[in-house]
Amino acid sequence: MSLDAIPIHVIDPPSAEPGLSGNAPPLLRELSELAKRLLASGETSAIDLSALPLTPADLAWLQDTLGAGEISVSLQANGESTLNETACPGIWWVTHRNEQGAVTSQFIEVAFVPELVKAHPEDVKNGQEYLELLISDL
Image (cartoon, rainbow, N blue to C red; front, side, top):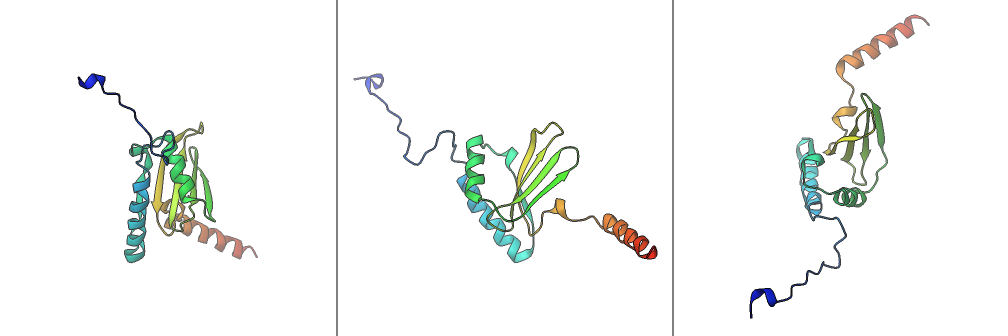
């Protein structure tokens, strides 16, 4: 009997969902380690989801699994950027879109506050000077 005569049937495991590659679940372990590092040293981290071999189904699974948190930030600068806290505080889903609304990049940032949201010192200086102007007009 030749090998060609042996029937082969591929059976998906019961937990497999169409379109999932299996690359998303290990990210949860990595995020846990990055959160430990954030707590121990204050060091922030980011995972570039666009650079990983993730399918749209993987991204949807990961986003559903991480859930939604209490904070959502939207920035408008050459397209919209959204920073959404997940159900795990300190884990942020960051999406950047171009002016046409197409996603240009996605990250998961591990930080107390995402760097993009922090005010630049020069902006704070300008704001303080503006307050001084308001006060002088009182």
